[in-house]
Image (cartoon, rainbow, N blue to C red; front, side, top):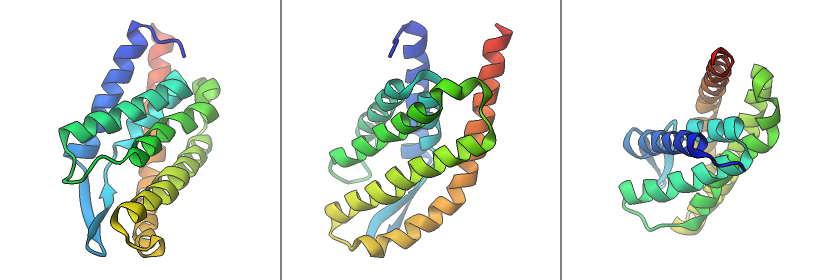
Length: 174
């Protein structure tokens, strides 16, 4: 990872946007009596960080967004390192899969990467962490979390695709 001043500033901005979208504008819905479903768009900046600046930069942004986000608004819970790991993977996986192709990405490449990342982190790992934290059954929480991902998947895909395209056009115009 090449972390110069411009990259650090961009990662800081994407991290801050992720914190605001997740902790301020996110909505937590209870499932089986616990806040097991958060609807937010905070993953979008992390996915972009990985695609635009590389997998390790994306992981750093994800880790920072979880740590800073917890300090800003803990949603009444204790810190759990599993969620920090999931956030780091949310930036790492798209970076591993798409960073080298970022200049000419197709929508289906972004969509399949968002799907895979969301399946690993949002559906499987975060559901596992919630099961460990709250003692609820994995399959009790899973259906609502899957349903929410059906809504966020196209939104994430379109937004990441368009923002990446705009950033690449900006880079060409400089």
